[in-house]
Length: 500
Picture 1 (cartoon, rainbow, N blue to C red):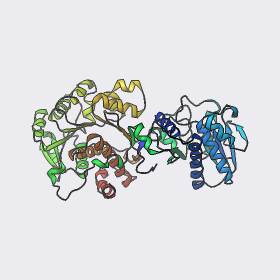
Picture 2: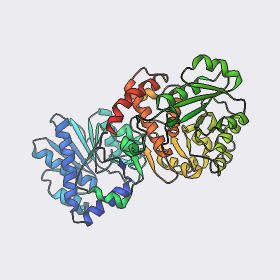
Picture 3: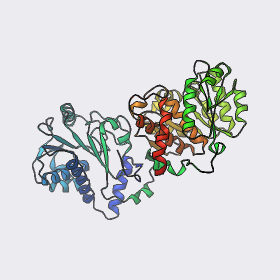
Picture 4: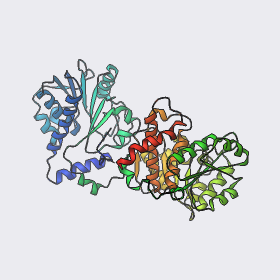
């Protein structure tokens, strides 16, 4: 999905409905918006597919109205179109009824074989605001079309995908292309919806972007326009002390690699100085592996406190390979008391699984600096069991956790969500399968650390780090191991910085 740079806002179904209503209230007819939507669908089909028999499947609402328009415009251009309708023609209302009146061809009742003989299917059955599971004839039609592997172009979202959550409701089309309007929705990016949408095209249908100032969306596509204003840019008068001093806490002798991966990621991401704080048992192992990264011995929370008394050491990461247990808990609390920006990852999170309240109270303490937490789903469930029990989308859960913890939450995955306590959130789209390798998350934590050390606000730092991490993986491609990620960052920066 490649929307224009100024189209990073994600609208919920309710917000999109409001944008439509505000546009209509300002004088633009609803049927005009519907005509523009149907025209956008037809235009994308003509541009991308070879002309052939098309089955257009329409539902009983405005999504179906868009389908009627697309069917008419395709037929006018010589495409053989067969139109199927779920429900009765005389039950259509409003703009959808007007669009149906403008269709002069036959209208067939939707049945399970609606895709038979078609080289392309246009799915305009249900829109993003699906309120119940798809069942009956619609579910059977979806099943047979998917099994036949007929290319599907979905209008707004594939029928069966919840536009807010990305959840599948009963059955869902596996679309090759989804054409949505004005702004994308969270369900286009959240799994599993992202897997069903195929390529997503965001089309302009005449809604004025000025409505966004009143709607004030708080969810965004994770892309540079979201955080470019705060991104640290190279300055001629910079030196290592102006670019922050990051500290990474190492684990014991047999668990040192994760900390070094994070430290390398931090150094490549622009921190002026990086120190690995190493327990005595791991000192020689770390010393043998580190060159431009400094090394300092520590033995327990008191030593870590002493290290952080040097306020030039302004950001700290603890968790990768740190070990699970009381010692790590004490080190975390010492870090939070120092006032340094703190990234809590992996073992630092799991160490509080039995007493998560202790961690949350410490984060909210008077001395704590900005905190970014980087759980995967398992770690998240251990820290926020009530939120998981309540359910909701990944976006909902991350927002609730951020508010409860008073911290930035990076809820990791192919659809990584970054959420702030004030409700702002962003969803990643550039995390590829190559990132599913041991140590990848350690490098991500190091990139977050680097941006915090350079003075980025925590929400922007977390979002930018997730994007940089995804781009590094994409630049390398198949065969990536975690050690490759830091080494791809210079190439990512070469492309990114001139565009900021």
